[in-house]
Image (cartoon, rainbow, N blue to C red; front, side):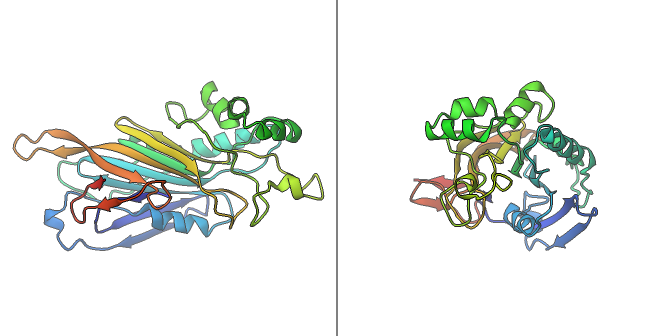
Length: 286
């Protein structure tokens, strides 16, 4: 779950990739538009809630501009399956999302570039059930899980392998994983489904299906962890980021950098005494 830690009014458009090209438009006029530095602010939480309502594979993309910096958030559910070669279908999904996603220019502002493609944005965060599996047998995976040998497991992680080969998510980044695989759990349980399944057909090899990646300069991930909610056969994955945002110097019309912006899963972070400065556009932590 991602949250933008500043107050704003929203004007957003989102497209659900993979669902008959349906488009949705919700708009709200800004009460103090002339004083606002944001040309098109969006709430990723709303889009993630929409994503949870769909059980089929697909993608929701969000484009926004904060001051002089463009952001894109992608929440996707890629092709499932743990048979050999299924990772190539997931690669194809990623490439098609990058190719086909086109943002309409509904948030025009004089002198400001509005990206039309995902990769054209200054900062991009991609999250969701990417469905990449671990290329090991169930027995070998369980053995390494018992040993908490994450490094050995990660060497067989399909997303890691496909990225290293340059076949998908080239030039994207992901923080190192220090948590157990997030899939597949028995409902309302701490047991992987293979431990309780009565048939091998229903058994699934544990895997890091749920991931967060990012693209662009001026962005750094400060935490990456899994939650322990048991309402699904997945465990949720959370992250927080520190990003640089360009501000327009009113006198020289030059862009200057400001890093006092945080994006994160604040209610799940293991921190305390977080204070948000309302209306200031920044977040301070004591």
